[in-house]
Length: 85
Image (cartoon, rainbow, N blue to C red; front, side, top):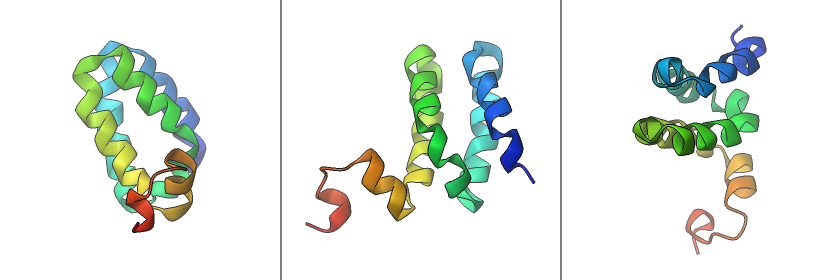
């Protein structure tokens, strides 16, 4: 139900006044359905870079999304931390 709205919500990440509250929504989504956010990790990183006060919230969202194996391999392709090695 929320999946079609994700790109539209990502637009809210480009504004300092809405980024923090949008990240909170994304965090709640990531806890339940992280896969629908997997294609938007660059937006979360850009938000952290553009608005340093949102860095912690951005990282929380990205970590919640990274819990799914496919995304881990895409985001951290050379890291042995996630492969148990």
